[in-house]
Every structure is written in C-alpha cells, then in structure tokens.
Length: 315
Image (tube, helix red, strand yellow):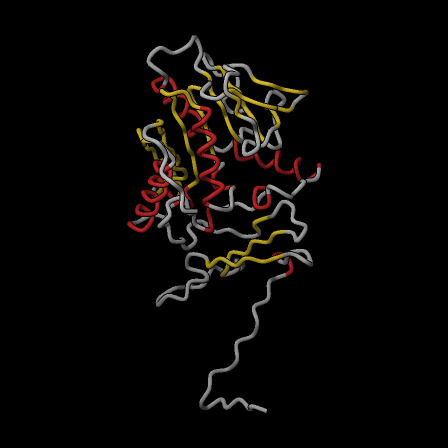
C-alpha cells in the first residue's frame, strides 16, 4: 500500500462535510456552486466569514418536489451567457419549475411558497419595482388605449397590481397568496384565438386567456424560477402570444442576474439579447433598489415591445 511521505507529498484533503444545519435530507441530490470570496480558488481569494460555508449548496428532493436553497450568497460566480437566456447559478431558484412536468407540490409546500412571496412583496426594492412598472405602464399603452389597459401578471402571488387605478389586471400564479389571483400554470395555460378580452375560469382556476388580448404582460421574478433557457424562451413566446401588437412586456429580475463590474454588465447585456431574440425590442432599462450602501442595484427591470419575428432558439 502507498505510504504518504510528509517530506515530499502534500497531505491528503479530507472529503468536504456539511455542518448539520446545512445538511439536506437523506436521498436528496446536491448541486455545489462556488461562492464569491468563499469557494473561489483564484489567487488572492479569501474564504467565507466564519459561520458561512465556502460553497453555495442547493438540494432538490429526489421525489422530486420543491427544492430549497440552503445558502445562496449575493454575487456568486457567474456562468457563461453565450446563448443569452442562461442565468448565473446564484440567480436560479430551486422550485417546482425544476421538474414542472412531473412534480405535484403538497399543500404544505404551496402554503410555504405563498408565505415567502408575501415576505418578498413587502420588501422596499420589491415595492420600488412595482411602482416603476406602474409608472411605465401609464406611458406604455397603445396609441388608442381602452378605458383601462389590460394587464396580465404572471407569477403574481400576492397580487401587487390588483386594485391599481385605471388598470384591468388578470393575475395568476401556481400558488396564489391573494384571493383575487387565479391559479394557473402559464406554461400550460391555453391561449385561445378569438376569445378576445374574455377569460375562462372554473372556481379559482384560470382555464384560458385570449391571444393578443393584453396591453401589458409582466414577468416579475419568473424567468429565474425556470431551470433551462428553453423553458425561459417558452415563457417569453407565450407572453408574446398574449400581447397586442402595441403592447409591452415587463421583465424584472434580482441583482444576482449580473454582478457589479464589467463582467456583470456583459452578462446583463447578453440576457437582454436573449429577451430580444424572442421577438422583442428593449425600450427601457432600470436598475432598481440599492444594496451595500447604495453602490449596486437590487433588481434589473426591462420594458420591451414586440418587434420582429423571433429568432430560432438554439436551446
């Protein structure tokens, strides 16, 4: 057997072991993401502060059901963005959409999701994003708007745009946290030609919406819940089907989409190019909210308009 010689060889590295409070349930699958300043092995990199793991750990139940992000530091290392709709690992959220075709969430999991959505909706940066979208909607309507522009809020949860003056809002979510939000999976929702401004419902479930019947579609913190660029492109394609010719699409994502600095700026531009490849033209961009003493934004927001035919998606 090989005998380790301390004079000539480095000591063997022990296998990484998570503290008990970060350990996932037995039978789960792990995904490791190097954290900024924590897991990076670049020269000069420092380990994470005491009490925080140097790696961002995500686990998904082998069932599979709703996943949980046990630790996700701000500004973790980014992934390549050559195909546009790729997102950094720190921006992806473990969710039902990771296995949206097969997973059936339990009542407890849906309740936990609804409660978490209320917390996010109460944060200052989230309220600022809602206010920015409302202000943009006032100037983004069609040339001959209706008495109240029609708005489709996908992933609404707590109904941030319900009750807004001079705005007809249809809000939907997988697990609504508001009694006026319809329950529906937008990736499966029928978009029907000839339905006009009517919607089909049954109880609290939204069964169908009309094609080209909305002046505004909002995807706020939605695309980052989807695990692949193909599903994000499918979400954008369906949003485009719902929009009128002069409508507007609003996309809001958290700051993890792009870290500060030139690399983050390039990643944000690549993501915007992915949005435009789906047949949209970016009309306005805004950095919303502030973190770290006001040095960097907490959310990215776009207002886009349907333009040319979408380009084929490479996946």
